[in-house]
Image 1 (cartoon, rainbow, N blue to C red):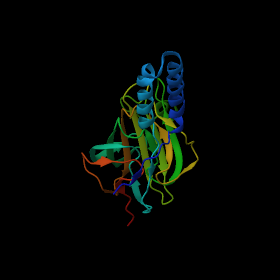
Image 2 (image 1 turned 60 degrees about the vertical axis):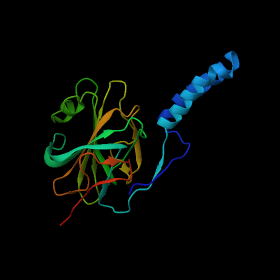
Image 3 (image 1 turned 90 degrees about the horizontal axis):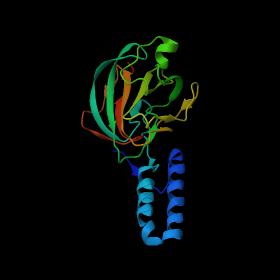
Image 4 (image 1 turned 135 degrees about the vertical axis):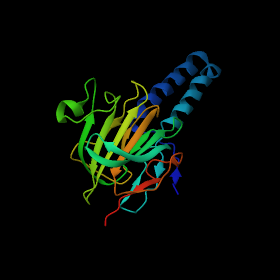
Length: 221
């Protein structure tokens, strides 16, 4: 079962937001008094909660894929991966607006390629791969494991202002459950394309925690 240890720690992308609100609260307190600043302090408390970066315990099973985000499984089934042009299983999750906004790597491996589009999808311009609806704002990351398995992680933001921020570069290695990005607001659908030989360990409606909940297991014969 997923394990979570909440700490008063803010994810790096959210620290400037919390700092601005904190400064505003102090300015209002000094100029208008504590009572008037109460709402701003309350807003700061909400911001700290929403922008938190909780500690998660990731499974030691090397072939188990963990959820990259907090939320709930939306659907599970066979699908065509438009980025790697293959048949695969698609695990689609909807982020929880009240969950942590930190994005974690579902598996350990090397980042082989990334697609990020602004206007015309980069996947079409550079590789000729087809783009999904809304790809002008989505972010896709291709991770290859040491065993040679291909995992595609795709983020579909729910609004134009909430774009995924990734801190990993093509060619870098990522750890199992490692923090690798942030999506402010949590208004997103998240797709994981896994090999069709994988075992699915989740069902539609299941709650998931980033870095902890196992959603699939890679199978090698």
